[in-house]
Amino acid sequence: MKSKKILLLVSLLLVMVIALTACGGKEQPTQGEQPQQSEGPSEKIPSEGPAPAQILKYATESEPIGLDPHTITAAASIRIFRQIYDTLVDVDDDMNFIPELAESWEQPDDLTYIFKLKKGVKFHNGREMVAEDVKYSFERVLDPEVAAIGKSYYNMIDNMEIVDNYTIKFTLNEPFAPFLTNLTSLYGAIVPKEVVEENGNLMQVACGTGPFMLIEWIPDNKVILEKNPDYYEEGLPKLDGIEYYVMTDESTRIAAIRTGNVHLIKLPAQSISLLEGNKDVAIKPYQSNEYSFLGFNLDLDKFKDVRVRQAISLAVNRQEIIDLVYNGEATVTGFVTPAMGRWTINYANEDLYQQNIEKAKQLMAEAGYPDGFETKIAVGLYDDVRATGEILQKQLEQIGIKASIENLESGQYVDAWSNRTHEMMAGRNGAGTDPNRAVAFFFSTKGSANVWGYSNPEVDALCDEGKVTVNEAEREEIYKKAQKIVLNDSPNIFMASPMEYFFQRANIEGFEPSTFNAENFENIVIK
Image 1 (cartoon, one colour):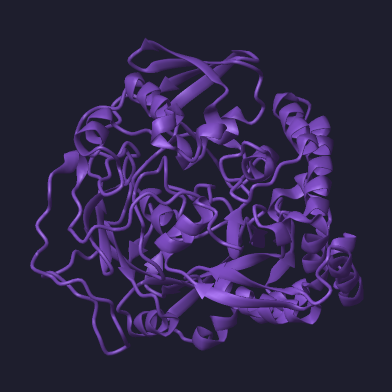
Image 2: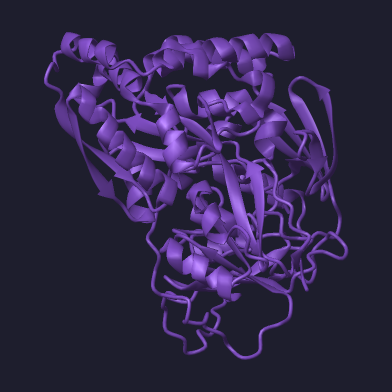
């Protein structure tokens, strides 16, 4: 499979303390096991009888908050349901479009896209996936009552016509250059209507067409996926299943990979030295397409003044964050990351990226805060986000801003973000593969992920122009201009795009993470 591009926004439900159901909502037995987290190197992962030889054990840092691909953006959830669901098309490592559930497609004019579906593709409940499922899935995303995070991705769809069981025609209400790119997102995952209707939503059930199917979710402990025996890619996946174990403490994850209790973990760059040189552990680096940010609640008076936000940008030493949080293994970035190549501007040379304490103090005084103010920085469970928040706390003291740190659980964090109950928030977002996603999704007035209350008519106009412009050189100039405006308005402060690191047991073969394909487990073999 592959790594989809999407990021954080909506939290609908906290985890119910039950064992989750598989496709169609049929409950699975809990096997009499009590939820618990592995707490140290001597504690073995709970097992339920002899495990199949090809079960990948992945220790993760946080609990999923739900499994609905249309409404959930939490990374802890995405890493699981990306193995379960598919989209019509995908992108390869070179950002070329490739077929997934669609066998082929054509675009007879600027408003029309016709997709031929692969035949014989089955949902995990055994029913064949057909054009009606594609139509239903996008109707669900566009339904305001669903509150789908990707609604703005697809609201240019004017009509969907089922030509036959394996052909569907999309008609747009205007030309939209990023349409194919948006179809690669899990926000457009294809889901079966009967499973949604039986369960009300997909928060705690999962039924897709992907290489793995949900078997059980034991809250605060583990999620069990099993190989899809009817997967449409012949010979894949090679694994029999994946087990995700929740280990919030980094030292616990490190102990588990050292002892072989798990096969795979993910750690920040500063932890490389803890496992480097271990012959039983291999390090798998790749450049991420994510960026760290500090976001502001623009409903609050102290952050409404652009001079305050600019002062904070000038107070931030981005290189210090890169050195201390990412061990130097990151690049200064904006919200269009270096991995997106020609679409990005050179943020490192921008004036607001040069630390200038005196200028920052001057702007604070002009805004009416010569002595600064008190505020809060909300952070989530990720180690690098917490560390970034702590460094920002110290850097902002230099201009009189006294910020306390709010450590939030995953559900609390997403809830604070989506409901705008934070003051400041440190986090990470994904830039995607098209500049319209990076700009419009997060910073246009009606962008689904604009949770800051930011609005600039000029940015909106540029996004409207960019999405209907087919000429790539012209699009590049449009989105670079939009980036400059957002940078100057500073609704977020952007900092670093890090390298990412998987640590795997040496007996794992066939895993090669990359920027746009970070968690493809289909070819993994455990020796």
